[in-house]
Image (cartoon, rainbow, N blue to C red):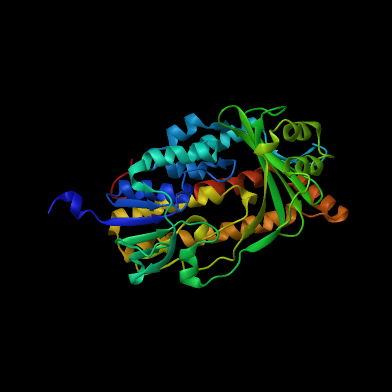
Length: 394
């Protein structure tokens, strides 16, 4: 029997950031990987994102950190301001540089499509099958049932199929996500009045604006407002976002106004309560399928990337087996589930709309020592994947 036919096989359901990173990690663990994606084209859903140092450290395990860092935009500013533009908390550029140097990795702003393209190239397009919808799981997790009635089998199956994961529903039942109580407009436009290395937020009363510089000399921005789920903007998303930031500082208004209206979209923000059942048999979950979180800490994609690298390391050590999947779940659940709750909490505080509670929040943030913020960031950035002892990936 040839080495090629003897290689274990894995099916990854979903070609988002987490699924593609998992496919790259499993490929480097000498697994024959097939990625199944229901979309007919490999197009990223979303706009930009921040890859914080923990994600860059994880990508370094796959040999991808340099390409991502060189392609994206390094970020050196992390500040929260009030709705009038006054600084509430943050690190000076000097303190930020010192902390990033200590951690050993940068923070990078990048468009989702750019990151997805890098990851897809690492996996290889021949391993990605588009237009394929998975509707169920069979044979104790070793098979997936497709919409056309076909069944595909592998040694392990990875569910990276997002917030409304079919594989998660197979494990724990179908239930709607938990709406956070606020929704978000997103856009990518010119930097306008912001510096390329800027990243941060402005907190108003029940509204926020934030973003960062990304590749191509562009600004990724978001605006958040409270309201019921499933709403819509009769005047269009761009006009509604511009109205939402009407009393924010000039640079905020300019950033939204300078964006192509066709490039602005609105989505509800949601998460799910943490669970400790991520898998069974030869199947496991990863990323938003396992631990969907609101974007308030900028850790959604970062945690999915960490998942993928820890999964690849577990499979390299133990083989493509249920034992490796349980090892991965045991290592990742505490950190990922804690991040879900932390993101939920910071979002609730950031969205306070009452004048009194908002003033108290702003005063507390303004009085927070920089050393406290540094400790919090350090804890979030260095608690990443367990190093793989047997051999480095990449």
